[in-house]
Length: 498
Image (cartoon, rainbow, N blue to C red; front, top):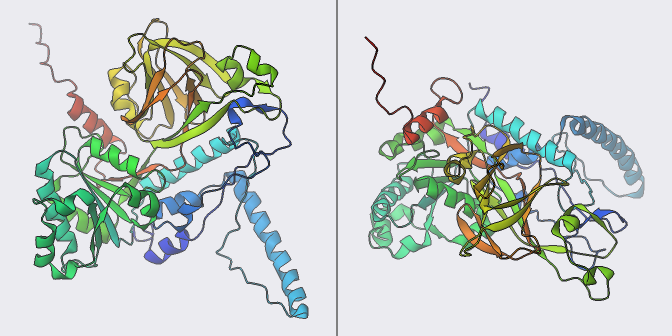
């Protein structure tokens, strides 16, 4: 296992190697899907590429960035690297003559890769490559222990439960104790700074060496400085884990969850053993499971210019999403992007009538659904609203998307399981009687008006869930948690006939 473990030096070196994916909208493309036209009115301007994840301290996310190439692109990358080395030798000889010194590139550094596509969404091939790489990395991480360099620890406390505040104080004091092998910086929620039960000032008086190492986080801190977090600990149930996923919208550090709530599908550790659990995790490493997350984009319908012929016709959402259109006609624009771990639900909200929902898969119109709503769930979310609505249970290692109607008006619509390289879209038709409401992991309820829709696709930012030491075969832990939480086979056995 020593060879399988990754050393601190290898972790730092790997975290410096990143591949960039640049998505641009080519202005000279005349046949474009309407759903892809989402840039500003200045079509020739290049959209800004967010590179904040390049400075991440998260080792798992660094590995994901390093696995961004498919097998064919990997061979192509090696050929490009060899060509660049040959060109570098030629440039070096010329620069010596001109008195200019070229910067030498080490063999460990890899060239940046820019992939230009004509849509803000990934192409079918790129989405398949991304999903393949995440699954490949997940299998690799599942068979080895990651020995991380942990300097900053992020603690998430269950909201609304005062009994957990005292446990958070106990954990924080233990992490800040000078008896630890490393001087950790501990981030706790901002509300605990003035919480009498937490007693921040008294804690610092008891541990003077903790001065400057006890810090507080809020949503703004996570949005701007999530890359500073090396390790996250949650104290609560599955809801606290979902809240942690919502906080880390891009970079997700390894998350170790202690079971202090009602459900236990994702909380695998007993808090009574937190000292041994954390000491072993920091000293010997952890096993990480990458949970598939979805990227959801809310697309708002734009009023069409009055001088265009389309403005005088009755608008049709199916035509606008899968048809072709002429240049300079933008039908929709993005309003918000959310990463989810459980599910995205589109329902009727407070409206008394059922919702009318158009469902699309890639460039095909699946159906017009009449129901109270529809639930698009990840494998992790298969045990949540999806299960209550009659959907299938799915092991979290399965790369799938689950589609389940909520109280469908027609009994012919059955739950669907789709591969994770499909881009789903669900929208409100223009002739719908009422609007619909979208919620993401049970949070951020947003009203969708007629003409609006939500795009759902696999995210390249999975949720890094820390697993307990394996006992038995792979997958036994999930089966055990399902049996325990759902009380499978809890009825009395049938009596033997005599």
